[in-house]
Image 1 (tube, one colour):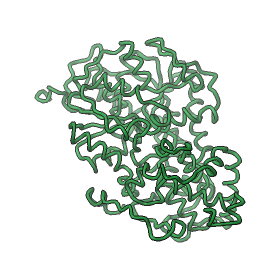
Image 2 (image 1 turned 180 degrees about the vertical axis):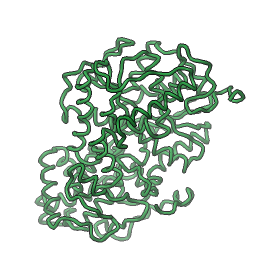
Image 3 (image 1 turned 45 degrees about the vertical axis):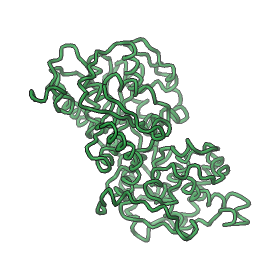
Image 4 (image 1 turned 90 degrees about the vertical axis):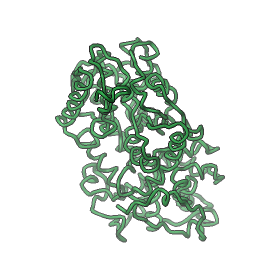
Length: 536
């Protein structure tokens, strides 16, 4: 990993455009700005094309002799398959409304990180190969020949897009840059050109059920460690079940909640809530991953990984599915599930066994988000809460791109948050809700070797956090995404030291007053509750 510059050095962004036209400005692969190449074993496990050992630093990427034909035929197939792609290729007028909306352009000043120009990397080839004007007029029509330099440029910049879709909010034509990036990555995958941080988790999930490759007994043991901590803190030991047939609800959450701080505290919050409710639910150690890194690979791989949730729900005979705090899991469910896997007619429309609320918005997917489930509990007064237990936390809220912009979860998490904390402040309006900034490391870019670009991309979000930190004393950022909890922990600590990251249900677990609990003196992190510092 490249030596990390200091924040004051990284914050100096030069927006001066290059002296040469963009087609004449070659991509320079800078250390700290790209991820390691996918490993041969990961490509083989997913039956991906051209598995081999290679490095982006090498001149020879070990491509098949007919690589150009493979790419152009792949583009032709996708233009025929996805009507939206052809529309997006044709309707852009290059107005630039999206140009300064991308966190990577704001953080780097690189024109090719403007969404409009990143799309041109692919659109220029489309014009040359698939339009009459491009074939005749060439560069005058914005067209260019496919070449090895173009391919390497694609690889560099399509893996500098987190598919957050903020640019699409400002596009007057509604062009979805994420869809263009996804197609660009699919074309690269036809040649075995992906990154290790995506293909490793995707292959692990395909064979083990989760991104971390955890065996069933390891997954179960991790949760049992949480039970020890919960018992020490509350005097109560929940009794979750695993792979239990006939349970009413299958609960699925990202594996990051089971393995990585601060997601582990969010997972402890789930366990406390479900125990207090007496919820008839079970975990699966086989469909033990809510996330879907296949989504950053190809539609086909994403479809296969997503189906495991439905297959396990059918095997266990549950009535419906409850999902945890994950980002892209919910965008996949909201926007692609029915197309990929079809309506889950073997399940029932989710109905809360506690409040009787029927979640009709999930008629087709039969799966609801834990934020809406918990918000419904609170609206019906089903939980006893003491928000003062979180009084040492001054919160702001990060709208996770996929759950907020991707499916409209704006009010539910805020409703829950305001019930469990007394100190809450919003970041500036143009950085939240549908205009929220990305964490800077989504879509599989949360590696270590690309830390420079991660921190640059995370600057806009962190800058808004720093603003409320300095104005209101905010010391915690809440969110409902496992990647955000991992990525923001790094970037926020870099740009706004002292501000920490939390999931929503960690706060719920802290505030939840449980029947039969002992006097609590610490929160789920084992840190003293307000007023209990001396006792601790």
